[in-house]
Amino acid sequence: MIKVIGFDLDDTLWAVKPVIEKAETRLDEWLTANLSEMKYTMATMRALREEVLQEMPELLHRITALRRYIIERAMLLSGIGKTDAAHLSNEAMKVFLAARNDIEFHEGAMEAIVELSDRYVLGALTNGNADIDRLGLRPYFSFSFSAEQVGAPKPEPDLFEHALSYTQVSPDEMIYVGDNPVLDIDAANNLGLHTIWINNGHREPGMTTADVTINHVRDLTDAVGTIIDYPA
Image 1 (cartoon, rainbow, N blue to C red):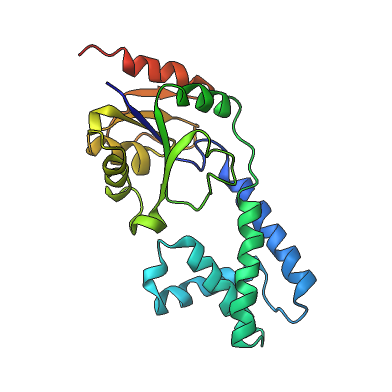
Image 2: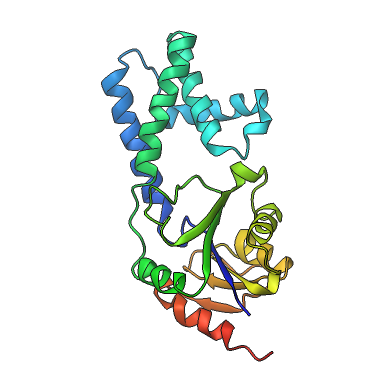
């Protein structure tokens, strides 16, 4: 009996590339308006990523902290004092995260979530840093765990195991919905979860096969019904 449905977020419920591009543009605009001495843009800051990771490899999967440290490093290299850089990098991240959570759901995504939330416990398992509160998903999602929180990204099992422990269900009582054949479908299948692959046409299948494959999230409710109707 299915009790829980977990969701990937980025590229499953919305397209993430335009969201990140918009967030970086807004951050560049904020830096230009507030820091005339800033010598870096979001594009030129990318060169600092490896430098920061060499010093703090523990940030590799802490994407919010990593981005903040990169911004802080760029500020320091622009001649901004350490105390100001620490404060201003936090302010910059507020700007970025506000825009990062300004998304447009795929057609039919919210309708499916609202309908499914009446029958199942829903939640998010993501390698990203989208915030279900800012996204308006909190009324429908009972949990949200990120790789940054649990200390390991998909396809490691930690996020899925965390959700199973939190909801107190067995793997065969949970469906996981995602767009990435390896990070989402293979990883969840390997733990014995049911899976629904939203094949957006950008990726080849993984090593395992999803229980159901759909081409659009608007077909999700019917896909869940297919799994529910599996013979025992």
